[in-house]
Length: 481
Image (tube, rainbow, N blue to C red; front, side, top):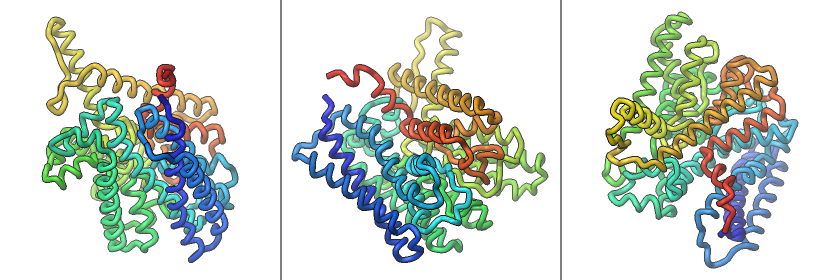
């Protein structure tokens, strides 16, 4: 049975947390620029008022949350948080329309990294830090959702990749409070490490802080319009590559390392992810070396950073990789679709689902060869049942259908193929910039019609929810008592 009181209470906690987070950009506006201090003051007070009102109105001693309540909290929190977090953008003079503010807030909280701003340098310090902070908060929420909440539903096979948290895997599944604290601590530690390293590399403290927040969240919002290419600093690029990679691995495996269980070294998902990264980096670097006549070492440097940025869904860039030719663009589209590991801040289909889909193909081929043989799917020494394989295939189908639908709408508005397909992929896989001359790495989404911005915003939310919660609430049985 759905408990509306509990749902509103937890939404109140989230809204209050958002209001508290706004205090940082509010303080920066008061100390430094002052351009948006009244805008952030209004937004902060409004969030705190709504959040505390919900907490006080619907608070009660017993707070038992069932699965239906959890799904509704998860689903409703995204539009609610997006609308409220978009207020500073809308009140800012650099944003003309409310849908632009919604798009920027959605891109921030979902850690997509697509932006409507054409000249980021014109933004106030408060807006810049708010963009980065939104991605950081979104990344933390995504990790907790993926590791502490989704496994409870046992949907999509994600339980298989949270087994290494401790010797007793059920600890991971049924102690979400403890998991949230551990994951939050690891997330903060990674952020501080990247911040210190970026500062040492030569970035100013403000830029280092903003990029540390968006790197660990694999978000990609930068304080410069030309992204990381602005700095032209190899040491900075290597640090960010390191940050993107560690944020793309399952955070549960880091917890295992602290418990002296170094399963991260031989985890099949991690090994496949890193192998694919190396393969794509080499292929792209060889291609741009011969096709674009770029020095092989520079080609490796450009391919290393931009390929990992696309694969992890971060969206940083050091070069306009849209100009690297059709083959390189095709590789980037594949990387957008694949994404990173489960239990990380990355988007895409996720490596573990690719593994399961491949295992399904192998099983069916064996069945054709030997119809009477009993073939099972085994992953991580665990037999995969039909419930898991069916849900993975449903999610894969939803990914492909959504990409087809969004790209078809873009083509209806007479956009070219590469713009249409990359816009669809970058929203559903929450990557960031698209490809081409309209929404490429050196461009923004500003000139798109409002209806397309709204469509992409919805696609980002679906991609972040991985269709799970959304599909569940559409089922009539969900609303039955």
